[in-house]
Length: 377
Image (cartoon, rainbow, N blue to C red):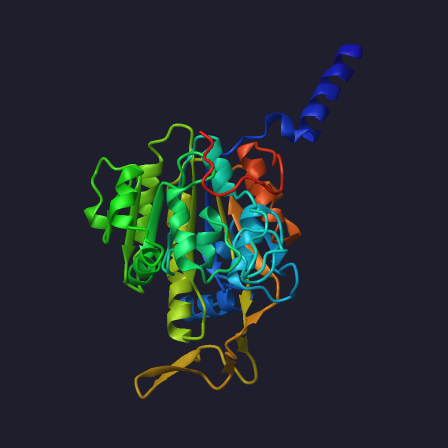
């Protein structure tokens, strides 16, 4: 009888203490839909499949809703929104991974990002986007600036990482503006990046097969993030310790045709990636903020959400797109180790802690006083 009771106690203990056997993530892939709020995802499903709820991200194993406010405003921009996601700390709109006391004249304290934690732990890292690579979302992963407009200062920080040897893969558009901004600071990327071990080019196809570090900057506004993601995973997976990868797609529906088409295409990329990755990878999707898009009035099933007038896409009469960021909650979807923490109503800062916990890491400090350029190896 005593032996039976002991067996029951052990069984109950195991069942009620899942942390004992919790599987840790070797890799984390964060998919970020810029402006990809609930209304945009709903419209994208209708646009692509004629029915709601058909997107993969709407059917992931774990789902939650996240609020997106910044430190000073209910409606965030991408700089503050992404900073919260990758550092666990809210900051002011326009600020890149610095504390909320940052001003145009004075830097705030740098906030340590999930990418920097990954570098510190010896993992490989990458950022991919079809927005410029010094823009708010990718920049918040690898740089720290009091203003998202400091393009040259932001991108030049790739050369002076604070942890490890810095982000390994930077793949996306913005070449002309980034080169001009860095040259204005007397930074010659073509000369300096190879010194840091990077291949520097303008196409994915040009990356040498043996490269483990690459910066590819194009001026293609429809940069192929699917091809970039496949290539990045292949390169980053060479690191036996694992990797962190952030992939962004601009889903703003100010151009409704492009926004909804991109949302559906991005969703297919997320599904393909999740299905192809091993079980040791946390795949997570979210948005930095929502965007004003409403389907209202007499909107019949089967009606197109936009039409073409004089060669330009125009929202249907029952669709309104004021063109502003909005404060509504956004979807969080996840699969893989740590996905069980994605549930209920979350803050955007919670997503950082979910990714950290998936790796099995504990944030040491929320801010770091060391100046950019100090490298810890």
